[in-house]
Length: 512
Length: 127
Image (cartoon, rainbow over all chains, first blue to last red; front, side):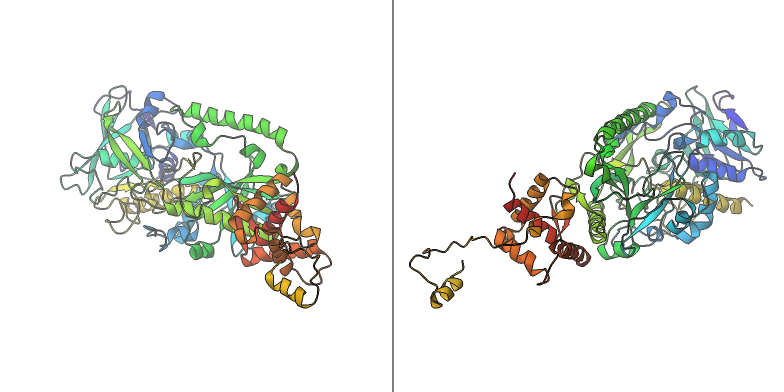
């Protein structure tokens, strides 16, 4: 069922068994899971079914620290969320991402990769991916021409990705709207969360829209699924009963904001052409491809973070501008257009230059987890949006471990390419020094927002527990990548859908 | 020429009143051309890049900046009876990578042998 919250009587009271705040990848995945159950699910979406600039403006904020994308345009604020324009890259986290690593401060999830495996398999279906298979050997049997570089598997391995073209807004609008027990409210922006006097359980959420309507939502269980920046913002802003914000007794909400660094790091020059489709992909066509990853053993030996190197033809890469440069318009549609325009021009220019040795050369872009850093954080600004909620400030801050890990990853790949006798690696200049110096201008994030309500069994080290429940509040949960304790090497969407489905199962057990 | 060599020659009676009073210490040692020809790298570099890398290596390793020293180091690592210097050098280069005998010069991750080849090329080639 669907209701436009702008059209109902002001100060309506909406009641259900569970309330999911946010209809992006996490929220919709959970709602789908509740279809045809005996429970009434309220699904709140701040926007409508299409882009609305006034609604999108509610995401606007400021950034400090390391240059970042405009907060208004780095997420989408309508039904379907950021799946409305995502690239669809999916890969599960590795075992090492979940364990405590003594060289990575604040690492160690309270759950393991094995705990998530059954949910990864279910997430594959929601994302319309192939089978839950991410071994290179499996795909080498399934697809032609996946020839791997002849590198030492004790040092590097081929981490596989699959590619989704699912736009949740288009794909799941009908199933959600037609489901009798799922009550979708659009133009229903959560602006305040009210707890009981003891602040031990949530009583209701206040929602507003630009039509001037205010409504209240009550449920037995509440799940925040608005993305890491917005989830943290909502908890911090709901401070009428807890001055530092809900779930924030230990000043952790908003901290440990993590991105994936996606940064041009080296060049690979091959002595001879190496025919393979393993390391390239095309949107809408490729089923699976790989990036070069560093083994767990070598991560331990060198005390580095988990990351991969993606190949991009050098003649194309040289003509592209970094995304942090092209994605600076506050309108996400214009930023996307500028980015694609730059890529289109780069492709044309590349065709003229792609001769001789450069036709066998690649730019290696690192994709790497960010070391958890409590000073990288979301806070509130004094100015408020049109619905009265303080705007967010994102302070993105990186560490020496991030830099050193990137350097070591490419040095290891360089050694392996030399040992294999197939080519040479040239590091980008920001990696030439022995010690960390500074980040170059083209330091991109992946538009991946993680960690602001991190998971830990100890309430002094995490905002949510192993079941994604906010510590100290019996019926408030957070869904998605805000709960990540560490950020893993690959894109977050497959894991956030898996984690959300796990949360969904947990809440089903509670309501039953 | 080193002092020790001079004294040996004198003792052997090779000294002549017409022999230069100061024997030039930079008398070039003969060496196989392959030593200054980093073959694989020429498939991805132009000569200017090879020279630049070679000169950068010499600055990084001042003790190996001279031609004779580079030749000595490169020959020391080759089998005495090398018939195919290119093949032997290629083996050394792969062995360098396998054993971690690598250097980073102007961002390039190179085998120490091929870096020395570049240095020798920089010294002996003309623009």
